[in-house]
Image (cartoon, rainbow, N blue to C red; front, side):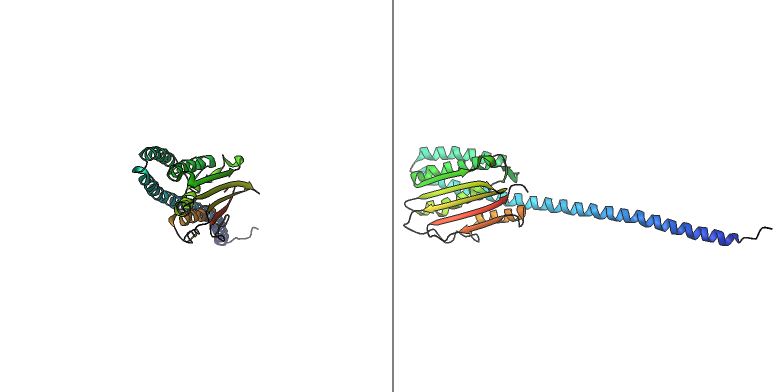
Length: 249
């Protein structure tokens, strides 16, 4: 004889087991969806941070353009009456310089050789203003010429050297630029050395002036803790800035 089975009990257990399976599968499914959405939000957050950082960097870089233009126009103004021919040449140099600046206005990194071209155009303007009073020397590692380099980093440093060094001395001085590749680091130095008749202004510190502050802010955002920056004014007539950047970021 067959034993009587409680169909309601069997169905109840099957229903309970099915519900357990459903919640188990649903739990796995929603866990996967949750982690996928979380990762998506993290990626969107990271992208937003990058976009914000790039916007800040571009704003800081653009801040240098009117500052630089103002100083260049002042240099031209100084020559207009006493040397009109040189003033016209300077205007042509400024035109070339602004063209190069506009070509790279939306770029945060450019090949070092392009940054150096900008530097040489700027110094050509100042050389017409100061003549033999200003001497410029450069020691550049040729291996770095095609490597990415922060745009508008060198020009403000050299402008600072001219403004606070060469322009304030009767005998003039020397500005030296060195960029070398050592242990996978770009090591750059800008040295401003003037005659001994008067010390360089102590106001040339990292806490003063739009140029140096701007550079520090940009490097902070680009490299975080992966760079170094030092200012040395231990000698009265010598001002040195040294920076170390990773070759690749």
